[in-house]
Amino acid sequence: MSGLEIAFLIVALITLYAALEVVTTNNLIHAALWLIVTLFGVAGIFVLLSAPFLAVVQVMVYIGAIAILMIFAIMLTRSVGKAEEVQVNKNWPIAAVFGFFMFAGLAVILIFSGKGNNTMPFLADGGETIAELGKALVSPSGYVLPFELASVLLLAALIGAIVIAWRK
Image (cartoon, rainbow, N blue to C red; front, side):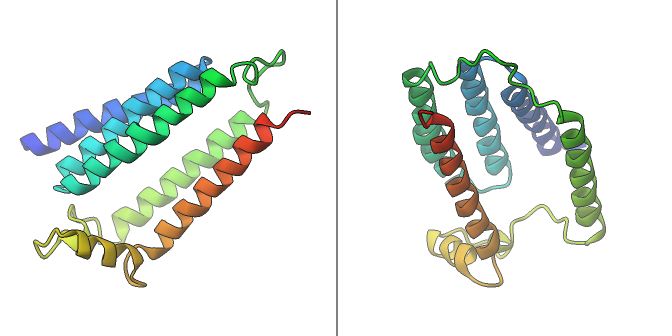
């Protein structure tokens, strides 16, 4: 096992532990701080994949802007998070089983697709310019679908935040 693989395993384990803490902690501020650790772990994985631009964007946009904004929003709307009822959904075992099967299915697809190389497609030829990154993000044969799905997911999260904060 090479040093790069060992570094990846360490960063991946830290990132997974922090992500688990994000969804299991009861304190919203602690969850936001664990989210920052998770996002730092993702930036570390980008560095290990030889994508320093994406690592810097990860730190500046997600940690520097979005996570800090979330912490301010939590601190300013602290009364919204103080519910008298239990915050755990009674159907969480069903969601855990569904999540496990989704993970297993994605792992099987990645293992048997033959595309499990360790380089990103737009970096495979050695080029790493911002123009190539932009073309890869919006080209039909590149990452346009995941890029658009991420924007829809962020919109859904914004709508969900508005619904939660809405005064009854």
